[in-house]
Length: 83
Image 1 (cartoon, rainbow, N blue to C red):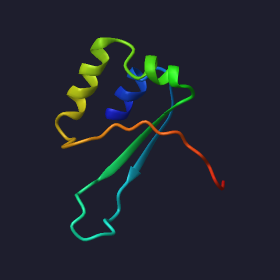
Image 2: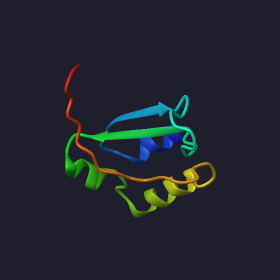
Image 3: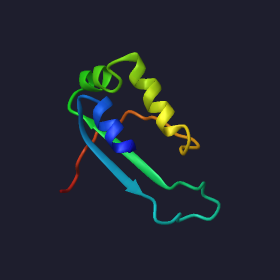
Image 4: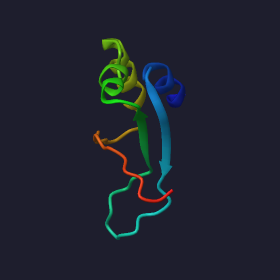
């Protein structure tokens, strides 16, 4: 359900990747079940296509509110060193 909401709301999203955490490599590491990545072709696509309408943000937050305990949004630029 969440993926279909994200694909509908994030209108200029180029890619959507789910990274499932299999195990923590350090004892005492926080419990993380997965890391989601969404990609946009340009900064403008991110700025205007992440939540094109004000109600989109509320719908998205309402969707994740029941199962996401914490999250951090970060802006990153990919540099592929080897493919």
